[in-house]
Length: 388
Image (cartoon, rainbow, N blue to C red; front, side, top):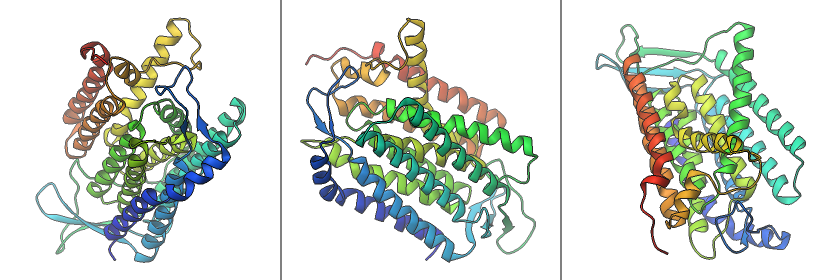
C-alpha cells in the first residue's frame, strides 16, 4: 500500500471508531457520573454527559498507531509534485530520524498525553499548578522531539525521468542542522505555542459543534498541506484528526447530546498545535501551519485582553467570547458554531495558498487572514438579533 493509501486507511479507522466507540464509552461515563453542570461559562441550561472525548482519544490513538506502523513498513515515501516549470518532481523522505513515521509518532504520543491530562481533569480535577506543569512538560517533550527529528531528516528530490531538481516557492524541505541556541529558541516557541493552544481549545469548547467542526477543518487543512509539500505523515495526521472529531459530531449534535469534556478539548488543542508545529518544522509555510488556528487564537486573545482592561479576573468563568456573543443574539449552537468554522475554513484556505506564492503574495494573504479575523470578531455587532 502506498503512503497516501495508508493515510487514507488511518482516517477511515479513526472515523469508524469515533462513530462506534461512544456506544461502549457512554455507559462508563454514566457510571462515573461525569456530567457537565451549567455554570457562568455554559451555553446550555441542563446537565449534559461529558467526557465523550475519551472515545475520540481512543479512536485517534489507534488510527495514528496504524498509520505509524504502515509508514514504517512502507519504506521511503515518494510523492510526485508539479514543479514551478510544469515538470513533475519526486520527493522521497528516507527512514530514520525524520523518516515518514517519526514525526507522526511524536504527534500521536503528544496528543495522547494531552488527552490523558484532560481525562484526569474530568475524573478528579487538578490544581492549576499541576495542570500547568503537565501542559508545559507535554509541550516541551513534543517540541524537543519534533525539532530533533526535523534536523535529522533527509529528503531526496529529483525530476521524474532525470534532470536537476528545483523547487518553486510552493515546496520546502525540513530543517537542516541548527546551532544549539536556535534549537533552544524553537523548543521555547513550541512550549508556549502548544501549551497555550491547549488552553485556547478548552476555552473555545462552549457550544455544540464548535470543537467538532474545528477538528474537521484543521485536520483537512493539515492533510492538504501534507499533500502539497510531500509529507505523507502529515496527510495521515490530518485525516486522523478530521475523522476523529468528525465521528464525534453526530453524538454531539443529536439529542440527548454529549460533550467532549476536558479529555476532548485538551486532545483537540494538543493534536492541532503539535501537528501545526511539526508541519512548520517539516516544510509547511507558517501561514499554512497556523491558518486553522487563527480564529480561535484571536477570539481567546482579544477576549482576555478586553476582560483584563475592564478589571475582571482573566480566569473567571464568563460568556464573553465572540462565538458566545453570537449565540446570545438568538442564533442556535450550530449556527454560531458554523460561523466560527466558516471563518476558520477561509483562514485555512488563505494559509494553504501561501504554499504557492512568493513573499508579496504571502504578505497579501496575511493581511487577508487578519481581515477574516476582524470580520469574525465584529459579527456580534454586525449580525441582527434573532427573536427566540
